[in-house]
Structure formats: structure tokens, C-alpha cells
Length: 148
Image 1 (cartoon, one colour):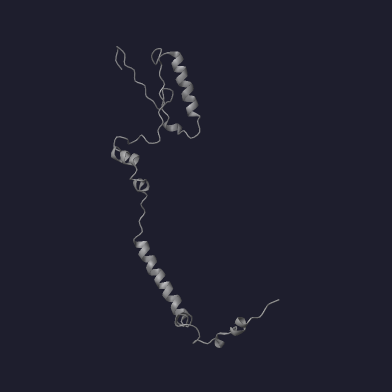
Image 2: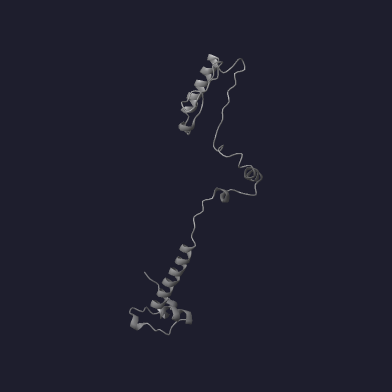
């Protein structure tokens, strides 16, 4: 059930455009609603001009250095020494020492093989770049009294 108020009674419903009074409303309302087509065309032109300006000045720049906090001391140190650090990113080096002999000890070799196998099967390891004495990517050169 709708309740009628004085405010609703004073605002008549205009059902057709011929019943609309073009002189009603403020000056801004009259300028917009009495010239609808011109306003739509003006908005479309402004949109096209801004689009053209944005597209012609658009450039992609996915620079790593612009994405990191350059004022942070660790980053400053990295940027100062980046030439010496090239190629060391995302690398984990595991060093295994044999305190009781050399690298040719069979027990030490078996330990290295087990570590290599565990690392090879670890999720997230890029197996193509894994290097140890037990991977085919490592070249072995032996020097003896007879030569290479």
C-alpha cells in the first residue's frame, strides 16, 4: 500500500516527451537534458581524444629495478655489486666435506650420490640445472702423470 505525500503529489509524472517542460530545472539541468545528443557526442569525442592520447604515450616497462625499494640498504648494496653477482640468483650451493680423506673415498662418494638423489627429487628443483659429480651435465677432467 503506497502512502501519498505532498512532495510526491507536487512532482507530476511525465509520461511522454511532449508533456515535458523544457524550461524546468536549473540552467545546468536544462543545458544537459535539452541537448542530450550534443552531450553524448561531446562525451564520445572527449573519450576518443583521451584514448588517443593514452595509446600514443603508452609504453610497457617491466624493469626489475623499478619494482624494488631502491632506498633500502640491502638493495643499494646489491645494485652497487650487481656485476659481481650476475648469474648467482636463485642458486643454492650445497658443500659436503670429507674430513677423513679425499673425494675419492667410496663412503664419501656414496654420501654424495645419496644427497644428489634426494635433491634431484625435491619439488621445485630445476633438474636441468642441477650439477654434482653424479649428474651428466658435469664434465670430469683428470690429470695424471700421463697427461689429461
